[in-house]
Image 1: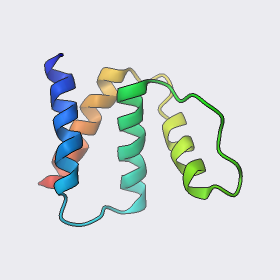
Image 2 (image 1 turned 180 degrees about the horizontal axis):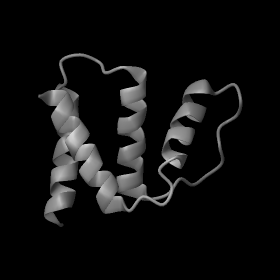
Image 3 (image 1 turned 90 degrees about the horizontal axis):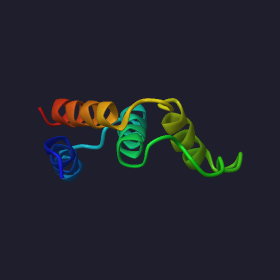
Length: 85
């Protein structure tokens, strides 16, 4: 396991200690960066029109299409550190 992967997984654990819930835009950014870093480009069918949360998550992840996994992991780590600071 690489140092970046270890740091990424540690950031995913650390975000659980956040004192207050981030705003929805930040939550979507965290979700999208995590998915891109752990799974790569968005895959699967887009959720239905009335699944507002699922659609928002899918679209946030889709916006990162083509971003290398290492870059997504690094951006996720930085965002978590900023939120915990």
